[in-house]
Image (cartoon, rainbow, N blue to C red; front, top):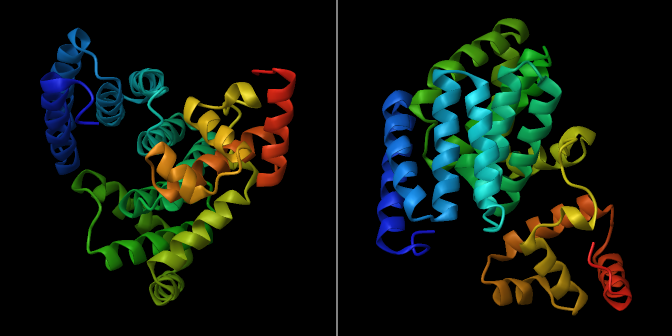
Length: 298
């Protein structure tokens, strides 16, 4: 990202990091001012992936300051800016923030679908701290639905991750987390919550994350009504992955060819299978070959 647009893009990247730290520390108003100034500078010398990140950070700040509508505008703009970049971390962040926006609007089904999608992507790509954030956000949705056992399992999985990696949630999220956890404890009882937490800690972070991602993948609401369908819905990077699969390349070979991690190739294929309704790599290769033979582009 930092090499994207010379000195201007690099300065904006550093300022975005500063805004992220300020926001995480609990000062969304100051973070928004920093991001407003950075985005104004980037308007003259665009750097799409940096702009997308700044817009997502500002959406987070605006959600806390003024509510979901302005935040939703920033998420939509970030998706447009980042569409051609294929940045999976940003895609997951956009889904995560969009899920919190949906929850703020009272659309708990849409919130759960978006947060599950963010969780799956983050787990499969190895973004463990971000995955813990998604677990806690999804727990909040389950608690709002009074699905307290599910909320407790997600909170316990997040705690197992935080414990193992030696990190903690952002201070800006602490008060909401404590209020949500207290609600679940009041309804389930301390002993039940403690037992769930002990089970997650005994299983470990990786097992807890894998179980949560598997459960999310099995939930029909994992994909939202707004997810593009069919070949037209594939991103440029997903099309590149499909092309290389059709050529017979393995995931490690595709990763080397496209300069990405093997886990990232796997995430792209997961999205491709979901969008196309295809169940296997062989089926994907056959269909891609058929379409190429017919000269079909969409």
